[in-house]
Length: 393
Image (cartoon, rainbow, N blue to C red; front, side):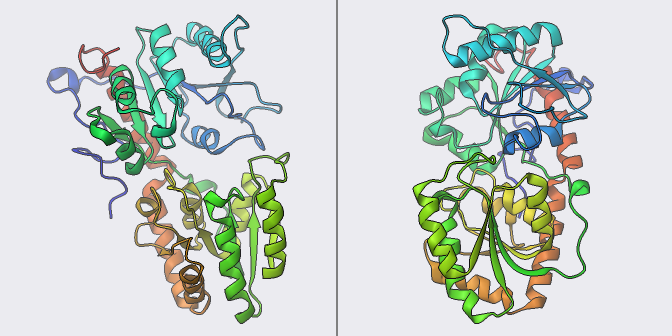
């Protein structure tokens, strides 16, 4: 199975590029201003999945822009805090105005906006001479300024659209949208993962948001069936309703606590990303039982990179990430999920085989590989922007 299958292209490389001599001109190391969503913070303990990805992929010629975090921004990456312009605008308009001020000082060759079509369109209007790309990490059909086919068609004409998975691309071009959408999968820096342990712990691990969409209750239900039959094994859950130590106690989480206690599942609460990676590097099995269609499936990729045997659902982009390296189960059928766990718990050889296959699969998404593809994509976008008709405002 290929990592992604965008029409007429390899994953991460542009589809339908401009031909002719101009396409052969080399544009080296474009200066990129990468704009985070307003809710993301570029600092340890505050960063969500997008900020962590941006940190992994950042080049030396890149500046990351976002609202100032409470702590120190990540080291090793140039960060410029966005100071919102306090005028009688909306919150997003004030944020965009602050980014425009940074554009004047940074003078980038390309603006890369993450996950906010409204911000990308506003910057396209405010900076008409600059290429603007939009990286989509979630289903665009639920985003402001991208919900309808007409809105997505206009968006694809105004900015360069990049999807993190073939599933996200498919959602963008649904309902007959004809826009060109590139696919650049998310990445994992294998060199930064904890070293493999000689003997993995007899632990079944869930790591993610403790919400119904992520299948947290399905995990508990499956463990309740399996754990009583396997002395010495335990199940842990890392996460909370939201990212951050201040995540609220929701009714769902309160109800799940009682079920988890009865099932022998320990809820460990929110933990920093580094601690999650340590847990994945020790756990024998990691379960990603998402009900909602995962736009990509970063938790599954991280677990494979850490060498754990993975059980995942078939939803969204998860199959494109896991491929044939893991087992699949329906989160709405606790018996099938329990059966997959039984299979792995009962066979050390199968766990070892799945762990090795997962690490091999994860190498396809290594940050060193994806960073080069991203650089080539940026060069192509800057080059193609010079041609009228490729992207229309």
